[in-house]
Image (cartoon, rainbow, N blue to C red):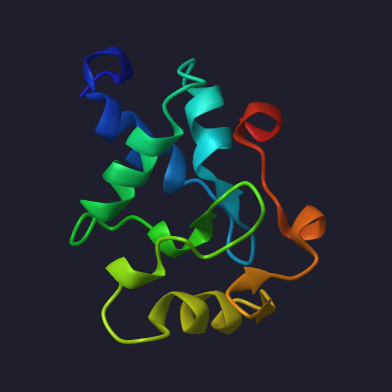
Length: 109
């Protein structure tokens, strides 16, 4: 499928699949990259619907590094466990050293 024919969710998934192992980005950063700066919430909806689509949704957090989407993962702490397995430190549902592990698609893609 050509990129221009992808749905908004499809474009979100394409960007999300490019987030490197051990890095995180935010809903807003993905929205900004896609030229839809006011659509961070829609990116969140896309992440909620990403199960079974081979999308590393656990790498997408809010603009402050909080695991706001964690309740959409199976198990109590799956999102945190997945991030920690990649070397991302999480304390009290917040990514530590957020600026160090933050990946901005606007700068990287």
